[in-house]
Image 1 (cartoon, rainbow, N blue to C red):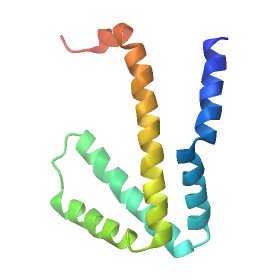
Image 2: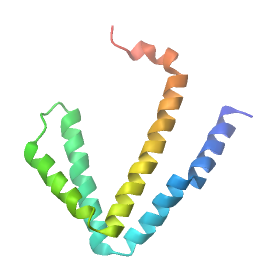
Image 3: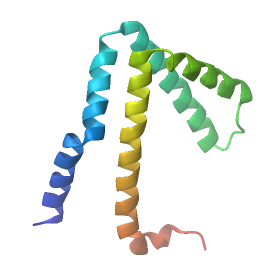
Length: 116
């Protein structure tokens, strides 16, 4: 079995995982409610913009952080939005774990990019 074959097996395993299936079910429920979907989309847009600002070296914007917190507080009161956000977070954690496992497996060759 080649590395590509194993990658395809991993892809199938991810598609069939409880986390991904829960994510898809939550997305389908969210898609049925336009207002909830918009709420989630707005939250993710603002969250992503705040993360980009931090990665660019800008200091944390307290006002934006508070706005995100208030948005999240509203989301948890909305079952469709809350379930989607939580399912998304669980699937993202699974994906992050897999990326870490792969990264650790090839870390020796990647040390050229490390700081000296």
